[in-house]
Image (cartoon, rainbow, N blue to C red; front, side, top):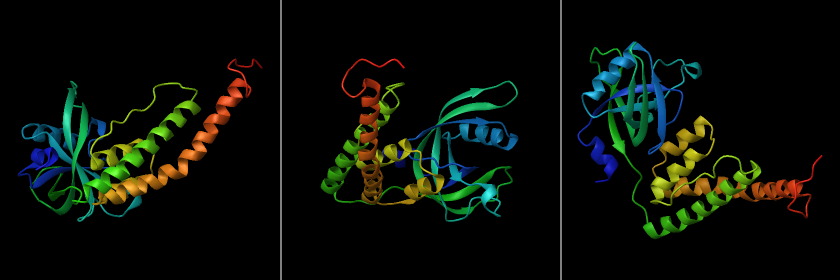
Length: 232
């Protein structure tokens, strides 16, 4: 059993926090809790395992009143809580594991509670996964360095540790500014290989153009032949 499954072992029902965003496993997300129903939710789950479900839901895009049965979400674990005097809270959460939302449970609580089924990626050939994960990691490092160079080396070069292929696929997905629909599609994939191949496609499209632009930027800064910048 994975560490993620151990954290939710025995859990069948989750408090659901619908938000217009997609949380990925291992992704860190700060939240500000101000609505009374979610303040109550926060207090209730703190008495248990500090875990709730974050489901993508944008009421502006649908006539529904809640995330649909059958949709995919990500269990979130509360890592830190800053309680304010008026009842509001700032919390730091991290994605744990994905779930299928099977049905809603009526409990009389002011927030949603759902029956869920947790899942991770299917088992695949590890040698093939490691090969593709290595290629994706190398491409990501090239893209990150090119973006850093294009920024004039301001800030800090993004760092992602090489880890197991499934974890790596979500880390790199989270590093992209993908639209929500595409992030959700990556979340619901149950094949690490499929997700890595999708990422490889994104990175291969981006890397050569970004490296070319980074070189042009560097040449413009140095007038093409000198390390000394030109004053205009």
